[in-house]
Every structure is written in C-alpha cells, then in structure tokens.
Length: 100
Image (cartoon, rainbow, N blue to C red; front, side, top):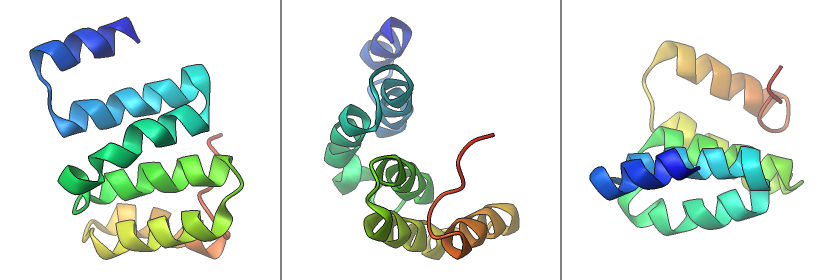
C-alpha cells in the first residue's frame, strides 16, 4: 500500500486512486475499497473500469442489484469487444465473475 501512497504523491490522478482502491480491497476488504472508490465518481464517472471496479466491490459485499447496475454502466461506456464480452458474461451470471 505504501507504494500506491508514494505514487499518489508523485502522480495524484484519479486512475492511480482507482488502482490504489483495488489494492485496498485485497488488503482490507471490499467495504473500505468501495469507500475509496466513491469519491472518484465525479472524475471517473465516464470511465468504464471505474464502474467495473465498483461492480466487483459491490458483488463482494453481496449487493448484487447494485453490482449489476454498475456492470451495465461499464458496458455502456466501452466499445472494446473483449471487455464487452466479459461484462456481458458478468451480467448473465448475475454479477461479476469471481477471480479464478
């Protein structure tokens, strides 16, 4: 985590903050990660990976309806065929597919 904190001091961008929040999820769990993601909505609301990350945290918290909505938003924001397939699979499964 200290490396992300150092990177934020050097490059304080919303995408670095997004990546830090994902590291928080692995270290502290989905609730603190979701709390770290929420303030980024204003700056990353048009970025599909922000919504995909939110969907994963919401899924881990058992908030499947909200996770589905976040996945739908991510799907609407990307034209990348591979990313679209993954998001469509997540939606068909009722939420994000757990990592393997």
